[in-house]
Amino acid sequence: MPKPRLATALMGLSLIAATPALASEALTPAQRQEVVEVLRQALKQDPSILRDALAAMQEAQQQDRAEAQRAAIAAHAGALLRNPEDPVKGNPKGDVTLVEFFDARCGYCKILHPTLEQLVKSDPDLRVVMKDLPILGPASVLASRALLAAQRQGKYLPLQEALMRLRSEPTEAALKTEAERAGLDWARLRRDMDDPAIQRRLEGNMALAQALSIEGTPALVIGDRLVPGAVDLATLQALVAEARQQARGSGG
Image (cartoon, rainbow, N blue to C red; front, side, top):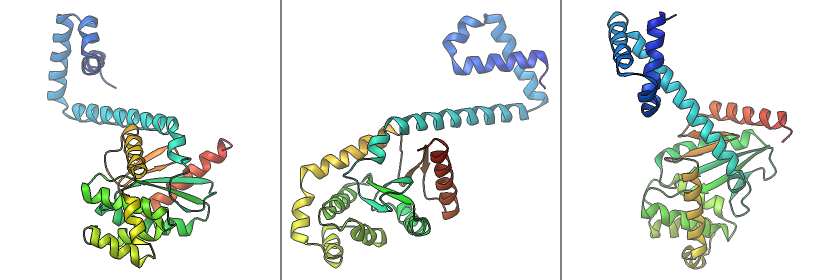
């Protein structure tokens, strides 16, 4: 337990850091000086105070960020979960939906891909919504356009599988090779890639990612949680189980 003067000083420091304008009204100059002096002496005697205070601040920031993300996910649930244009893998009527924002050129997305495939195979009640998010330049945009154009021929998933395994750049020549290998009509695909409707879909995905404060790929939405980066199978299974339990508990 901090001593009374130290506790007061810590409260004053928190007030100064959180709301400087309010703190300037709440504390007199003499009180502010006292806060600084008490803290200076306390830190000399026990430097761990600063470490613990920083850890507490970081934890509070993480909690605030998670709460904001949960609110954003709830606010955009329709666009996230129920857009009929989105490609879906797994069980279309699954009781849990996982949403993946990915870039076909993203190395971490390629690392995560086989893990997600394992997850889908191991969970017959999982629905996965695919959100193309081409953030790594023009080649990424080209690949995403090809994927959404392939969806019109019922070949989104085969082409996506091919591109996630591709180790070279998704140039137009590479896309043509992979598309034809997947059984797509390349001439039709190439025309559809330039359809403005496909660009609008990509812009919609980008706007949704921004609304959720997604900063990179891959990014997963599972239940009310946003999960950044490539995570392992056990973590994914635990998150899906948690989302399933929450859904059952709420009657969803």
